[in-house]
Image 1 (tube, helix red, strand yellow):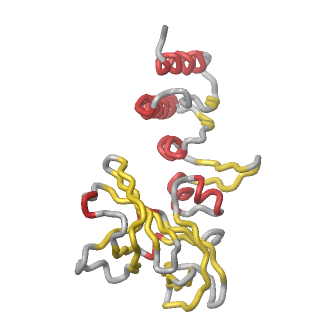
Image 2: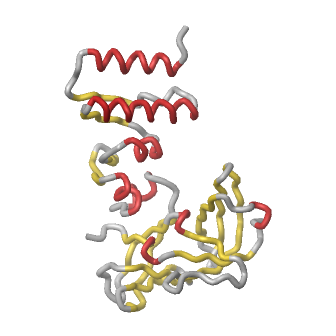
Length: 226
């Protein structure tokens, strides 16, 4: 007669009653609805911190992993792809699998056409991307990614920070997710670029509209970089 959330609370209490040194949780929230999952993951995190217990938490929910972990281990086909702090796993993914598994992203590759001081200019298709840092030299082929939320839509005539790069694109899809709007856009060469906007008026974002995008080159991450 108990709800799913109540059942999970009882299960966790039973596991903690013997005062274990290590708490193992295998997909503990997979059968709960979205709102209850958010509540329960917060409770599990508070319990873990207040008791000072080490916990290993297995999940396929990337948001869940990022929100409660001190360290994340990403596995693929039984092998560890990357281990690190949540922010490092998300922002500095080491492999294409990690970059795509940890959230929607724009995964690309391009040839280094020139260096501009500490920056690298990469040619991907007919589009040039600027990346801050990196040791690649002219002529090298580099795999890199750019998270959708790192891109900004720039209103006509508006200025952007002087060290940012700009792109021209056309909107091909608009997806409203409450406060978040996801866009799929096409660059001049036909390549798709995903964009995520927070609290942006959706009325100005129509399919077929040409837009200007800007991004900080520091948010372009080279895959497999040391």
